[in-house]
Length: 66
Image: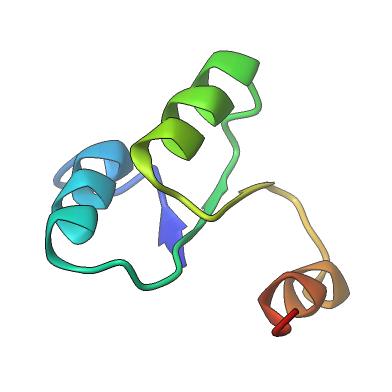
């Protein structure tokens, strides 16, 4: 679970670092709801993009194995 609004760096930069080291699942949770941000982060390797606010039930449904 990755929030893009980190205090020391942009979450997109952290996503790139994570993807360089791992292919584990990443869910981006953010208040950024612009389509360009969504596409950029999905192209960068996030598995899900969730816009805040969201419910606990919604998040639980996203992390269930398919």
